[in-house]
Length: 143
Image 1 (tube, rainbow, N blue to C red):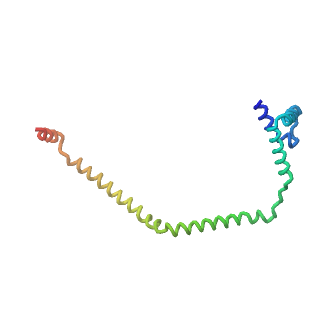
Image 2: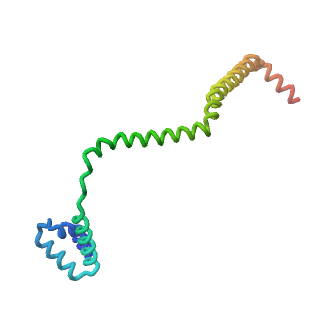
Image 3: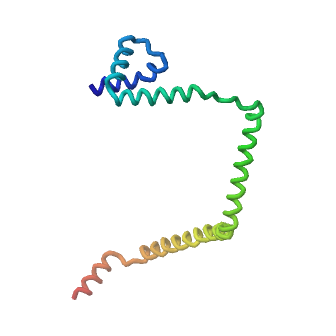
């Protein structure tokens, strides 16, 4: 029963506007309107909405409206961007200047530290004792 009501609700706008061609469906909708108070309320609500929308006509905008539309939108966008830039530069302009110097300096310092660590480990590996001598050191320490 519910599925049939959904089908009738789906076709109700066409019934109200007079675009429904199926006579059997028209009779089903009429019977549902007469027998079901919830369906009748939906029908009345939709019918009133269609009457309201059909009664109001939209006025055509003046011819020059679209000629001025894009320039006016661009002016507003530019004004918003300018005000945002001013606020940012007032609050954080000094930070941007500091970061322009600090980030490259930090990269150089980290690169130097990394390079010095790698080269010092390389020297340690090259200066380590031979494996036989290392074995003797371990044995003497164990005693």
